[in-house]
Image: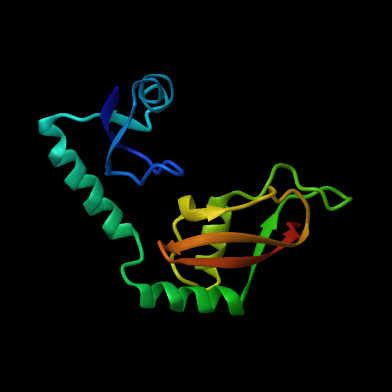
Length: 151
């Protein structure tokens, strides 16, 4: 048995927000619906799908050329993030994706959606680190991050 759902958030290996997907009943009932990652599909929900698609189009990088230009900028530049750190260089907390997106923008780089940035493992110390950002469905760019202690 399958259930038809509308994804409200991007779900790895399933789809992106606004897509209509068929999933097994248990996956829908036990995972997607309780976590508000999806809503049940109804005939009247088409308007909601259109609104989410329009919002996604506004905040995404429209073309492959723009994504490649952004990747070139990210490859050439090192982004500096200032964070509160202890005497041994260990951060109080971690560098978030929002911090990285803001630092790229402040450095004169392209507007990057924080939800598309992936930091593995978490950045919890000063020094050089790396992260990745999915700029387009076909374009993934590395971000070199230099974390400095805030004074």
